[in-house]
Image (cartoon, rainbow over all chains, first blue to last red; front, side, top):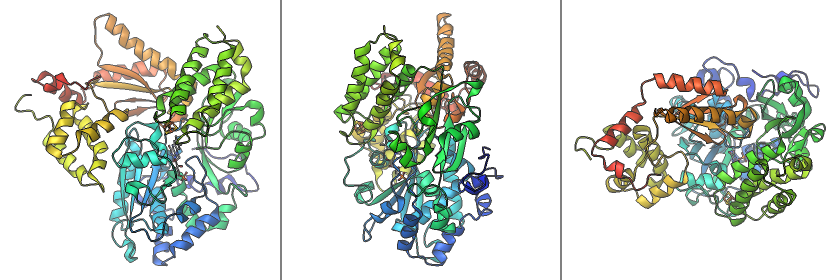
Length: 428
Length: 187
Ligand SMILES: Cc1cc2nc3c(=O)[nH]c(=O)nc-3n(C[C@H](O)[C@H](O)[C@H](O)COP(=O)(O)O)c2cc1C
Ligand code: SF4
Ligand code: FES
């Protein structure tokens, strides 16, 4: 079990385990284990004390919680967009987790799926949804089972169903399973998929909070976002804000992958130094290799050089200012002996395969980037090809239905701009 | 089609019926129903699509839209054991390409000796376990740290196991006077 090793900002590592506090329990997926750690106390208090839904929305706004699915949108604000008088509303939990490098949402359900269920019922109460779905990617066979079992147990214990705990609030929950399409992680594509259609993103507005599943107001939130809601309800907004930075409050789960000694899922306060994270939590690189570059937020995040990593902190603002993004919190470590030309080839192959194809700049752009990166890696390229990669990438951003096209262009641009010398040595 | 074997077992028919009413609209049941068919028969044929329309009133156009968009649905009879190795960035950094090559080589070597292994191998995108790469699946079972040696070992282990029920069913329906073998949809 990974633990932060030293105190940070005057707090002991044990203090930042808001979510990972549930690690290491016996029978971790069962409701009894969850209840032994204050599980369902937040929901019980909300319903028994007849807390006003608007007060809960305000609490989440005050906590500063931002969406953990990648975009970092303020969660309370999103809930506030849902029309109050709509007769039918839905909550959709985004458990598609397809961003290469990311495996935190599945870890949450491995250590405690009830955390997600409780968070969802409270969230649904806050904006008045009577039905929710957990949309899981199709390959998550174990996770689908854990989530289904937790939902059944919650029904049996009276935390789901009609008139929960005698409060008059009714909520039903079910799972839905995707079938192998990265793009279904995008919220409007996910809604189409849940409707039984192909998962292609739709133009926004209208935003799902106004017109989503079956045209009804639908809040889409990531697993991690929803799972931390019970903690915030139990401890208050101020307690949550005691972690992190002014603009990026709270803790976040980060996944470390690539050739490091101690890969895993860690919880740290936002604003934590990236270098320290890799060296202390990750134990540094395997075989004493030197760091060449880091992808800080999943495959969609522009690459940082080892030099840039020195001064980066893991929060939304710092990474944005550095031209990258916090994204899903997947820190991918690239060692000195891996060529960035090959990294480009690998990443562009991913984007080429996963574009849904409905926007020309994305379909054509990812197609070109994929084949050009491949020919550069095969040693068939020349200087003008590297320029063309940059030119194509610059034509792909901000012109499409969803953010996928930008997500492909960003890493391509960062690699050709920051590592031009590596391409020269590979020209045919 | 042999008269005794309906392509859908009674159990599958019951599952299909329960999916039809589980969601707000019938159309939402298409994805789970296709998973259920595949769980039983290993793949989804054009006959199955026709049956969903005639027996369960699901539009074949809608079903085909789903079948062709999502990569987990198989539209031709597969090998009994399917190795799927993640080659996305984190696994690739841990050597997934070598794993893929080793497994593929084993299959090809056997082929050149005139031997057919019950395996297929393909590269897939991120499977959501990136800290333990290379990550791979054999059918629905997930494996971590699948080095080339481990991949060969897994192939050895699985070839000792009884074939999965779905593969057996798939083979039965193939050898019957199956109209399934005339599937125009196969790829
Ligand atoms: C191409 C693409 C893929 C995405 N994949 C995911 C995903 O796997 N999981 C996720 O939670 N959000 C994903 N998102 C973000 C969702 O669209 C959405 O913003 C998010 O689920 C909202 O939840 P949050 O506010 O709690 O973060 C993706 C977005 C895009 C553009
Ligand atoms: S940007 Fe790409 S993935 Fe997104 S809708 Fe357009 S074509 Fe599809
Ligand atoms: S990159 Fe291979 S499992 Fe995520």
